[in-house]
Image 1 (cartoon, rainbow, N blue to C red):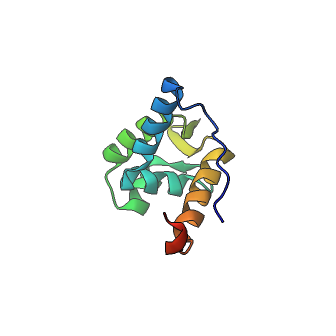
Image 2 (cartoon, helix red, strand yellow):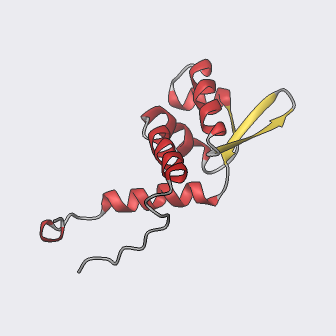
Length: 112
């Protein structure tokens, strides 16, 4: 049984489609995706993210700037440090849905 398609945005909404494609491209980078996953549960500092991902703080900062500009993450200053977390619950929902999707078995008969 195929699911009924409900288009959330009109196919001719070029600006929205462009922004959505940019967001998927941004999240398609493995390092940025790991950073987002690291920031889902609690606010975390650049240094802590870099340590957990075994990456340099400058590279992490570069990715954080892009993710913040795309409204995926938000920042909060605490003294001299800046902590990052997911902007809102939508970010977790998108990731949770995609993880559930890739974990589903592929029914070859319905793949067409």
